[in-house]
Image (cartoon, rainbow over all chains, first blue to last red):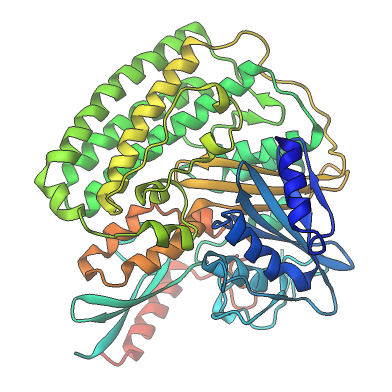
Length: 151
Length: 393
């Protein structure tokens, strides 16, 4: 069963995904280049009944950003992994395929400064409207630009 | 008729927690709705990176005041996955028991809130009285009524005695009888039927499209439950059914939640009668090797997901939390369109929103540049001066 799942994915995503791995808890990770992200999600939606996106995780790992799109596909949770260079953190929006991703993509922009291309509504989600250019707080190199409290 | 945009919230008598809906109405009918969240944003995801795993158990527990246990379960599970810890079965059963008791009290709380929003406050009094019984059980089993400090990485922290098992069983008997009475009320009482049937309809296609979760999804007739589809803890061994409703409205959500209480009672009974003997926890190292793990649970409000990345130290590299309300708020904005103004509280309350969960991510303490401490007298003068400037005065 487990082998079937990964080998089916590997066969279908030949040439689109780079590496597909499964951990002990039935969580499957699939690395996708940023150019093929939309194609991969479209195939998952049309051929694997992947209508649900649980959330998008973004990590700052020093030289690059790492995005994880978590989608339950069949009996496993599949996570699409996309790497973005620090100098050009842009990624295509999923909202054309999965409208449920709209808030998660706004969150990406708000807290980590990921630019989501063609997103219909890129207002702030979590930070206050008056936040301005105080930066993206979840980045590892972010320093609080506000004045220190005097003790 | 002219269109008018009304702000509802962040502070509004009809809402229990701060969020803002910008509702555009034509007469009584809502034509557009937009939601702005972030008003209870506490910066927890940044905080997780600066605290040790043991400290983080207690922070994750404070993400939400209602479904506190499901968040700490998720965090502990993710850490155990990376550590490769094998939990004793008794520990898993007790953890599952707590998760289900939490569902009981959360659903009873929702029933009361829904009753209150539809103007049926007697229901609020009844169901919150029954919810007290579950809170008393929590106090009995864990020592705390709300944040239980019961979970730990590798199992749970307190064992259960035979007398406590009997008390759980006794409470289950009472709750089963009471819930059956509520179901009779929910299916026959005219106040409830008139107020909830046909209100807040979310079709199956829309529920899937907008990625709804939990009872909202199941009330839209989608049979999906993390406990059944991706079993965790002891759920693989427990007998229960996934409840769905095909009425798609707020009444469907009421039916789903009420019947889920009965399923939960069934599960708790099974767990208490088949409690495995043995240890309740395993010892785990304090430092977690580098790795990543995802943990998903079915919180009372729906799918809750944590992603954990460790870097070999005693602090996580990143912990991402997505609480169920963030997934559901999108379909609320959708369902509001076409509804009446008077139905707003009921539709919003329908998903059992929890803003504290949803807004968890990062830094929003007071803005240090402008913050200052006023004495009571200064504040009074400030408010008088402010109101005198207002045009309507």
